[in-house]
Length: 297
Image (cartoon, rainbow, N blue to C red):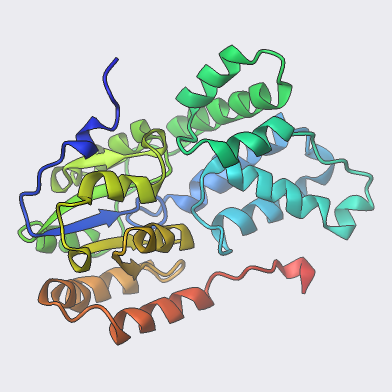
């Protein structure tokens, strides 16, 4: 059986710089439609949340779109959403009981390749863990919904193509995402931007931190590695590799990409990105992603 991460492990630099790029909500304006039309309806359906659907929807949107957890893998995000609901007075007043998911809680702390292939294999070996089988059925349904609803015609944000074109002569580029690789590949190829990256790494290949490490460790100077992302998890992936981070601010993505195109890339390639410039970008980014939800204030 071939090693699915071999393309990362065996990557040989062709440029002096390395850039990792998140996809959903960062390069592509797909976060809102995927979560609001695909993820959340299936959460309500598969986890029997019809009686508290409006609360479930708000909690799921907060975790996945409007908080410091934005962009995390679907399975930890699901658990986080349940925990928020279980601590919400208006939800408890309706007599709602959180689903029992002891195996899912344990699995997301022990496994790094949090995707359907690994979960499917796990379920085959553990037929008596209903929470895991339920999670798999939900996750498969999400993928079906995404394939059905997120059709062709969702282009990258403005200035994404221009930035990729500008960077291609200086940097080897990699898509680092927690979206399934199949969906990523389809989206990047449909829009004609897959040609700019040497590989597309999705959730099946591990975390974003692992993606960067596997493809760059020992091959690029740390100050020549940049992660572009729209979520704290992307910054964590950069920090975990001693790399730099360029934030794409949720809700103001075009401005962020324009800034990257007009000055960020030049600073990165010119060695003047680290320090005050990066710190100012991160400070502004953090203002847009709170930890405490509206109903707790």
